[in-house]
Image 1 (cartoon, rainbow, N blue to C red):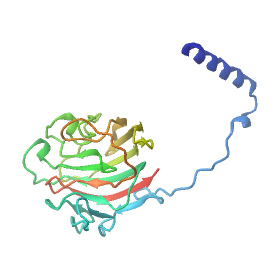
Image 2: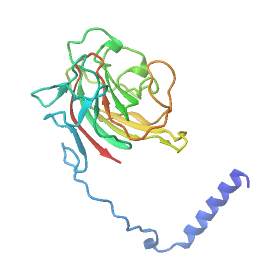
Image 3: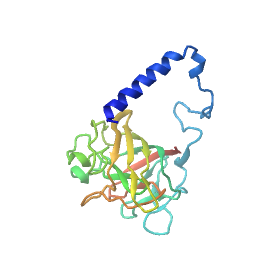
Image 4: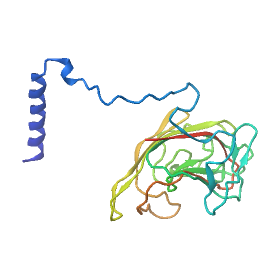
Length: 243
């Protein structure tokens, strides 16, 4: 059956079935009942995993060696990249998630573009949401703050000035692979920066490479990486919900 005829048939069938329903109760669904989650006005949802609350780095480790994370914990409840210490990664692996993270670009950073307050947040250790000072500093658009690195330019520039706390709220759907290692479904990501939508259900094409094209090597759940790019970027109030 041609596609347009099949579509027309389904539309007419839907109209016919709807015409036969006269009781509103017939379309009410009572099960399952969504579970209750407390959502404080300025806090962490009750079902979230706290990755950093200012107290310690117990949820993190060094990315490249079997050692504790050694970034600096500050008195204001934040942590700061220790240049040269390397990236840090969560001890726990994740797939589909809602992630909240706050960051602050230092004011003393010199230079422009990629040299100005550079860091990054990697979902499943592979897919980077760029952290950078893009308030008034120019760089390539698919590498500015809020970009899915070298894949998707943010819809708008929602950056605040350096030394001002900013936040990302990320909704992420992990890619799927079959038993032969072939990708059957891409990763998708939505990002709000400071309450403004900057990535709208973008289909991630593969790993966010600095050089070359995206790769799609099969993997499962993996950690969240915070990048040491040599700049003293600070982070605070990091929580995550498994979806």
